[in-house]
Length: 131
Image (tube, rainbow, N blue to C red):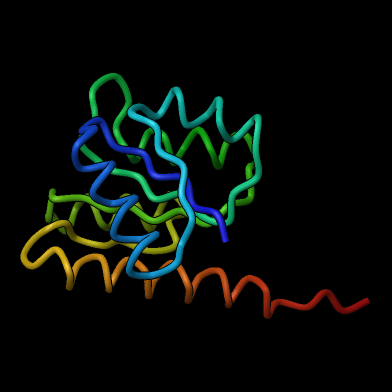
């Protein structure tokens, strides 16, 4: 399983990568902007995108809209400290598969994030095409 982590905070990115890889055995690449993430998605294949919402130049919802407009069929999790219901509704309305809050105990939030990643990837692999 390979995850693309997108966040403008390099310290948070490194922490996220470490938690997912060491404690949950989920490999990840990191980028500090949605623009760089779009380049990575053109270069490589990922099982899931995990993106922050509040980033300069392009927020997580705008990034998600571009992914969906480009017909990139990849699960998307919005992982953010912005806890507004409006943001969550926008994320789901634009094709996000899940929404995880960045707050509280890091161990608990990364456990929740890893569970969401695994659930989404397993659900995708369970989908069968019937002719």
